Length: 481
Image (cartoon, rainbow, N blue to C red; front, side, top):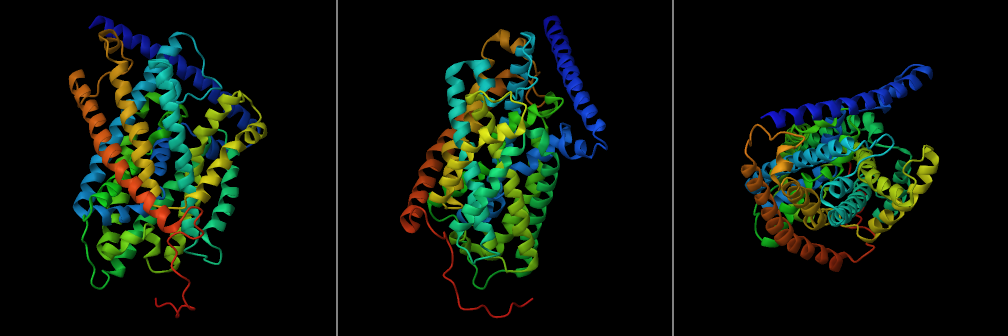
């Protein structure tokens, strides 16, 4: 008992040091702001509280996926859809919890060696490197960067796919060019501290869109002769399941969001609370839209394309566009950090210099979004091949290996969770996550989503000018309200 207590006290004291260091930094920033007049900037710009982290997680978890979930439900059927959402939501929260434990462990070990993180943002691959060595670092870096790269690509595709429903004078490819240029401005936002107001707005936007989808579908009622035949084919079933795995695997940026908090050790349960809130958005909206349109969704991966064109829908589209812009920033910021560290610009104070240095990251993203404009299928492919490892398998294995020795378990910076008080239980659960996600997510999911993806390439071709666009009709009759 005694050594544990000493370890805890040592832990607390190191965290007090971290906090006092952070407080000094906050005070410096606050003084700077107050000398510059009213601290409105602090209110909008410097966020590091528990609530900021909750907003970041909740708004970042569901962006454009909200629009593709009804498509997944049409592949899975209603019951599977709801069960899998809850199942992957719990798995996702668990692995986010593991990531936060590993982060605290890494940081406390480094603090004991008197390493200061004053101008440095800790990232996931550094945590792996510090705890498990260079090979893990390489794996974490490869999966994480590729995932974030494609995550950003998906946001761009989603922008073009959505705006087309308001303004179809330009085709989707041209819209991608335009939005690529707009999203490039995220290079000016230094770190996650500065997303405070954006996370808050972003969550409002997804909440509006989700409830708009649910209510619009219910008001619209069921289409004539609606069929709910899912699940029919294995390929489709696993494609849908992987999209849901992708939905709740949005925490590749967990470590960076934690690092932006003033007290990172409070992060443990935030992700779970964020996920519970997200359930209130994803389940009602997907169920309602699928109930109304049934099998039509199989060929419409974007739910907006089926809902009637009203001012409400246009508002939803515009809010989602702004939100995609924010999520693009969220997915890209860690990539900027990695790139800055590679070229040695990470400690530069000047925002403009850093922005210039970050531009090469945006260009490949833009290019990929123009090559593969398959909104929907690309989510599933990324989910199976990248999210499965980045977010589920690597954290679970890393946790098992970090605490494999008795001494590591005794000196663990964080105690075991109250709902799983034995190490054996934690190990078994981790092993279950690894096996399940590897077989179902990566194996079956990878096969299904790649088959689907290749089918899209064969049907629409690369560089498709306008993916899943209806042929232009004659001038439409006046809208009925």
